[in-house]
Image 1 (cartoon, one colour):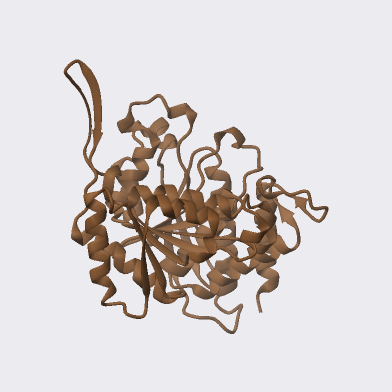
Image 2: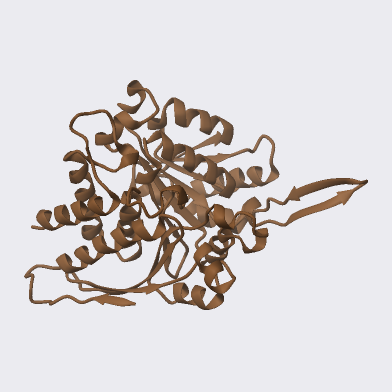
Length: 380
């Protein structure tokens, strides 16, 4: 544990000074590298704007299995529950893939989400103008602009239903139960509507109501809620059509709200059309308690320890924590602007390099230092 303390007399103008305890899950693979850069950026933001952040390390995932024999021991979970916010790198890797399902690294993440009751995952998908050429979509599509957010239900549905594998009539079978209650749909639906109110007042509810009973209930609840949010335009879309439309014309979407498995798939698709999975942050929040903030990519064990990973998704996740968890919009804006300015200067990690002669390849740690330097120089 370590703390960044700030001399309050350094700056004349500031908002309310905050002292926050952040639980830090460095995780596996590239997790420690990208998290370290995000913490350095947070330290700089604290120094510039007069806050203090205390970081409490938490073991989860493969690192926790190696140390404790569990992907998330209860004592480590408690540190997260007692924090003001949780910053996560990434967990998992080939090393632990042959373990029984109940003790694999990913089980730690599912346990964390469930115990924190973070039922809403918000994942923005935005084309950074500097990286538009990296998108796999045609310029005629990307030039329309891609700036959407997917609001995904996170603690229900098929991932949290009963899973069963058995033998019947001499043949093995498997089944997974998808279940949603009206209450679960309503609480995520409200966040979808409220998110749309803060943006462009357009909400697309995605389901599979032509086949699934859970989706029929989903659609029913969403339309009932729509009467309370008359300023938001609600549309419905089947999940297979949504997958096609995200590729055909992503500019048509502003806010998408959907259930757990559909959101998992669609948000990964949306992230890739922006050009790099390494650029996308996410937040997972509930009705109370701390939120969970993490980049959407995996642990990438093949490049771990090489100082070549892209830390921007983690840095932007930290900015989301400041904005949505701590009400530090000014500080979040400053971090996001610093990232944009560094990209404007042509600096790129390996995953976002192009053939442009103006691109300058930098390491993970160099990218972090560039963001810090720019953040500092931008301070009024």
